[in-house]
Image 1: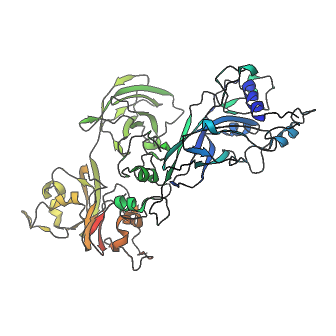
Image 2 (image 1 turned 90 degrees about the horizontal axis):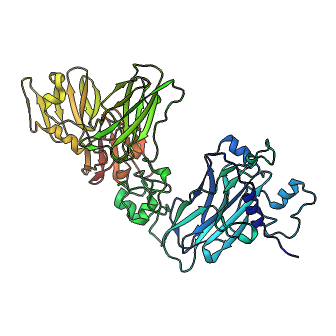
Image 3 (image 1 turned 90 degrees about the vertical axis):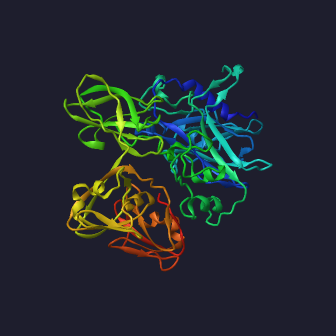
Length: 558
């Protein structure tokens, strides 16, 4: 008896029904392992759906798919590894269709499977097709299928690509022109007649751009913590084995630490996007932190350039306009072009509202204020260059007596008179771990009258004041990633990041040699390697700390 090729049946069916012009937001992702694989490993890859709406999910309860997987030379699919709980068995589907007589009750390749898989080893590709009439009990809304890949012989370490793309038919004798691409994912709308072009909408069309993912295979490495990152690389950049691990991306540049370790990259320097192993989901530069509010009555146009110090704002930075409600009241957000330019269509309902601006830099993902503000005026067009405020301000509430403080901004003028301003007469004494200065009323005396320069070295200061006041310091942000040199035993240290951090994470780079850390009012000790106890739970900007270590070293925050 002649066997029927079910793959050809399914893809032919797609070619006939996929005529809808409706546009959907659904997309496909290849979810590959986040860590490097050993040469002999079989790596599992999931085919996931993203951006699904409730309507998409309903349409996909009766659906079909057809796609082609292509593998870089040296990589192959593990035979028989393609699985799916998303699609029901073809036999069950045909029976559910209640076609009488059922034209597919003969010997059909793949009849007892949910997917038809056509492995073309010579072309390093696999073609897949499936149809679904009734969801199975194990079905999920977002996972189409999974498969495994392995290295072919000889097995060679490397970063291997997998590409998912629309299937192309080349069968003119069967009625298909050469190079006819098939829609990737088709649904079924039970509310429409079968003859309606929108009854079988293509949720992902045949013009879908290829989806590329990567799997990294490595030779045996020194990996005592079993995170598939070489221990020597971790110690070189982090001084420990805890900062980098499975799925981490230290500098948030879209390259997991496992990728950076394998490729010999610096995990503390952001790399350009789009290289092998890049994943925008871990790239802090790839998305805006703000969303434009809907429902406003009017709009205005504003355009110009954005200055960032002596340069133009980096291309790809996000710049946003905000109403009186601050960052929850975003009126527009766009990306800076290659000439430092922006073009806003700012929405609003009330003329005269104050509009402020912020920029998220593409170079470091930090958010900066912009000095200029405007008033909203409907239906106007204005050209205005904007300037990023590259200075920062820190405010500290000092109380009468001694205060343990630190600074993450460095003013241009570090003289006591300029630093304390109108409050200088309220300050009695300033000291670091090794130096001090006393205010005797008419002048300052001490062994270093420029001791505030130690702000740039990550020093903690003890400041004695006669009465309560608020100290405001404006200056250039201190490099929060600059290592702070530690003595053996005690060191007075600053906390330089812009936001608070759990104390365990903050001291992670020196945790192996840590004995104690304390603020003015709380402390934490490490009596044994497995204990870290005490009342100090987080470190925050403006606070000063003392740390005790068993040997000298360098503390790095992140």
